[in-house]
Image: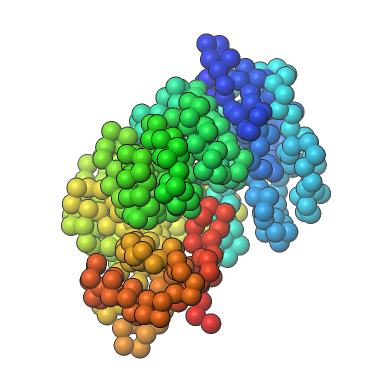
Length: 494
C-alpha cells in the first residue's frame, strides 16, 4: 500500500476527470499538481485542520494531507464555537486549510491559515511509501453522550475499506459517482471522495442535494449515487410526479444508502418507480464499513448484507455470550434464526486505532479478545444477512419481557398512508418495564382523531401485539443531524 491514490501517478488517466463540484473540476493531472504543491507546503506540520465545506478545495486539502503523511482533522462548518473549541483543543492542529475567501469563526480563525489553491498548477507529488498504521484522519464522533471523541483513522483502514467495497460493489475506474453529502464525515469524505479517487474514477458533488441535480448527473453519465435515508425519502416523494427522475434513477448502476436505516416503505416506492433496488451498507466512524449488500446479490429491504472481505462480525448477548456471526474469512459461527437480537461487535483492518487522548474510552470500546463494541443491535437472518434493529442505547426497548427493536416498528408505521415520518422510543413503565412510544409526523395536519388507535392496531396486526405503540405523539418534523439521522435523545415527553 505505497499510495492511497495510485491513479495520481498513472499517466494513462492523467486527463480523466477526477473531481467536479458544480462548474469547477480537476483532472487527475490537475489534482496531482494542486495537491502536490499543497503537500509540499504542509509537510511535517503535525496535524492540520480542514474547513470542510462541500467544495473542490476541501477535497484537494484532504488529498494533500494524505500525500504528505499529515493527519487531517475535518471540521464541520455548521458546528458551534463550543464544539469547535473542544475539537481544536483536543486535536491541537498546527494549521487550518481553507478555501480562499472563507470566513473562519473563532476559534478556527486563530489558527495559522493556509489557503487551498485548486487550480491544477504546481508540482505533482511523488508517491511516498508510508506506514499503513500511520494516522490519516481524525474524525470526531457526534458526541451524543458527551463531548465528541476523535477517532484516529489509520491509512490501512481507508485502503482496506475502499478495496473491500470495490469487491462488493464491482466498483471500477469507469464509475462516476454523484452525491451531495457533507465532507466532514466518513460517508461523504472517505467513501464519496476518496473512494472514486482510489479507483481512478470520478466524483461529481452536487454542492447541495436536490432531486434535479441527481437526475441531471445520472442523465449525464454518472453510474452510482450515494445518499442517506433523508435524501432517498425526498427522491421517493418526488418520484410520484416526476417520470424523468424515475428514468434517471433507473439508469444508475448502483444506488447506495447508508448512515441510518432506509425505511422499507421508501425502498419499495423507489423500486416500483425505477426498477432499481437501493443497496444498504453498514458502518460507523470508528469502523468505516463493516457489511454491505453486494452488487451481484439480491438487495432486501431492511438488511445491510454480509461482512465485507476481511471483516469479522459477531452478535453477542448482554452477558457477552455468542449468538452468531462471521469470522474474518467469511465462515459463519453460531446460529442465525432471524429473531435473536444481539449487539454487533467487529474486528478487522477497517478499525480505528484509538480515540485521541482517551485511552480510557479506547479500552472500554474493545472486548478483552479485541472486538470493537459498536453499540448497534441486530439479528442475523436465516439467509445470513445482517438486519440492524437500532442502537443499544436508544433503539432497544425491553417491554413485557421482550427485546424489541425500534426499527421494525418504525417501518410498520411508515407503511400506513397517514404517516409521513416516524420514530419510536421507549419510556419507563411500572408494569411493562418500558412502553413503546411512537413519534409521528402525520400527512394531514391536524391528524384524524382516531389515528393514534389506528396506528397502534396497524402495528399489532403487522408485527405482533406486544410491539404496538402504547403512546403516540404528533410532531411537525423529527429532529435530525447533518447526516439525516433522527436525534432520538431530543424526543422528550415534556
